[in-house]
Length: 170
Image 1 (cartoon, helix red, strand yellow):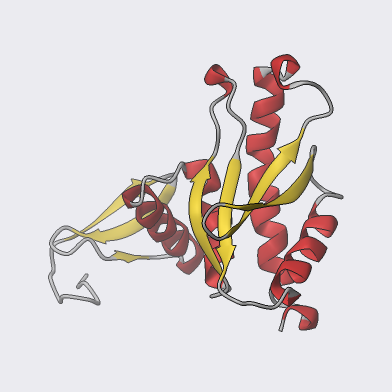
Image 2 (tube, helix red, strand yellow; image 1 turned 180 degrees about the vertical axis):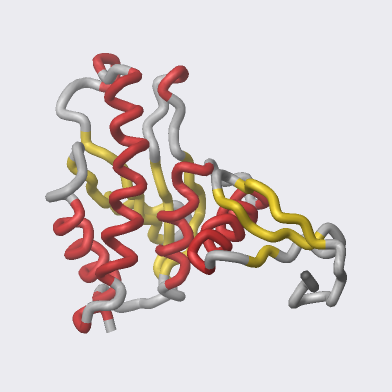
């Protein structure tokens, strides 16, 4: 087999993140199932940016809109009592993209285990914070609650990716 990018014949089939793919040992190009390749490349880019694996799909779909710029993203850490959070800015001055995101979030909240919300703050510019809402004081939020929030990140990413193809997002 020959690498589609560099032409090298030094290509190996290996398990990468649970997917059997071909990887060029010279340039690192991946070949195989398109969805698996996209997922692995998404993870690699996110990791280079220092983003936690669990939140990378959500960050990727937000950035794919060309409207939202990620300021900070974390999947949280149940062992340190830290909840997942995504801080972002809008590149548009009108509120339509935020309204669309809120509409998507409302639909996604029907499938998440926790209620997710967006808060607005001023930090030298308008910054939006996407976070889970816990119906108890922060000191009473358990590591299990935080793990549930982390699992919701996948649902949020999947729902938003689906909604971006709907007419009201355009």
